[in-house]
Length: 291
Image (cartoon, rainbow, N blue to C red; front, side, top):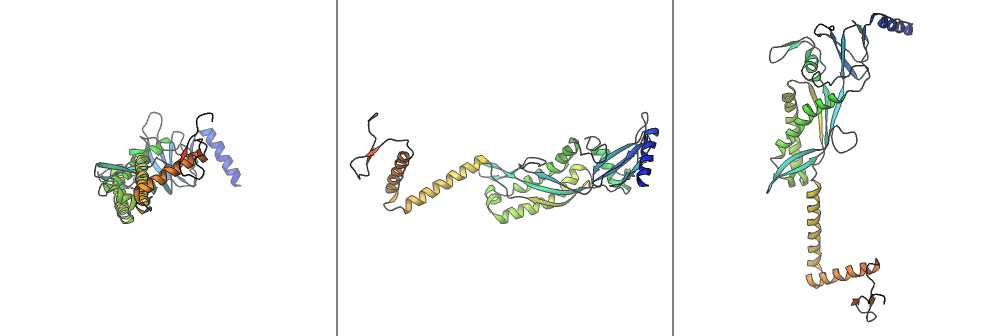
């Protein structure tokens, strides 16, 4: 019986040219009426997983419903690259590489309300989001089950990613890069400041409470590759110095031992053709070419 009803509805749509809103369970839709020569007017919201048949010139706009994430990382599938965060440095500012995820829900509340400017929105913040941000960025899907277009990603970059970078930068400038990179307490304090400030910055950037943040996960800040190379070289030099100071005979004996080891490695690897003279002597000389 249900199949028959759906078939009849499909035939009616074909014959009458009616539009059908059919968001899947992960979407919520806005229904607007209007014609080729008239402006669009908000009518109602279509709940996830429901079906609505409307006039031939009506429009339906689909957005994500439920929890979503914005991931900034160099891992596959991320929404954006890692965020570069400024921190203090004796020579100026050092940028750290930060990876993480912001978990949020798009505010699809359709309860009528009047915003801070006094404008009335019959479709609540959901309608206001579409009319002020979603429409101009083409962030909506046009059919049920359809993936969100590139415009949705642009909206997330502008109104979630940009505030996240600003929140991390503002908080990061209170710390030296060594503190954020190597001190757990400093990193935790910085993270707490970001978690407090980010929802406010997102609201200011978007102009209303369109994105409801439920969780912010930030990985340990990492140093850029250039600085990491310098740190590794410095650590290696410190280890060599420590080894030299503790070596029997002091620095000169350590350097002589290192030179002998380098020569021996070169012989073993076939990079130097050499024979010991005399037998058992620690002195090694290379024989003449062709000898």
